[in-house]
Amino acid sequence: MSPRAGLDTQTLVIAAAELADEQGMEEVTLAALAAKLGVRSPSLYNHINGLQGLRTLLAVHGLEQLYATMSLAADGLNGDEAVQAMGQAYVDFARKRPGLYETTLRAPEQEHTALERAGERILKLIIDVLGSYNLGEEAELHAVRGLRSILHGFASLEHKGGFGMPLDANISLSRLIQTYIAGIEKMKGADYTE
Image (tube, rainbow, N blue to C red; front, side, top):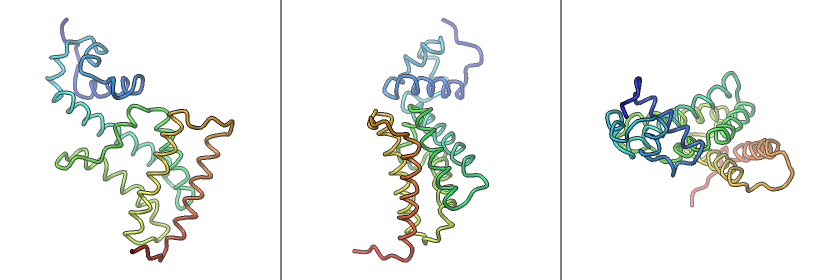
């Protein structure tokens, strides 16, 4: 089998992301990727540093895509509307790109600049959106963790079939985000030290 013309790192990452979305991250192997692209596994090493290198590139790609989705949703909005739009966009991304979403969950590796930068962009976006609540720096970071936990929990439960009742999941999500917003309003000036 000869190498396919036009094979480059970006092509590999996009094909691997498709595999992840179709079959799950655990099924993304170099052999599966090579088969999808119609090349031999060793030719992949011309573009990536093994499976771990591929997974890191996938994580960067996933974070960049998630950032673009959330940023677009919140653009031009502020306060409650921005949080609602950004939260819905986050869950929609997890719905549409489940394998790629999974790659975004790892904490960025130190000394991997692109991965750190991609993670920091999402963090900054959320902090900017939460800025209108005037929580203060430490409370803001706690609020970011809280929002991420809520959105990830919702997305994960939904993906695993955890919502069996005949209720509109989008209404549940909207109400959950509104409850979160009411909660962060209570954080202003609160002292949570032990």
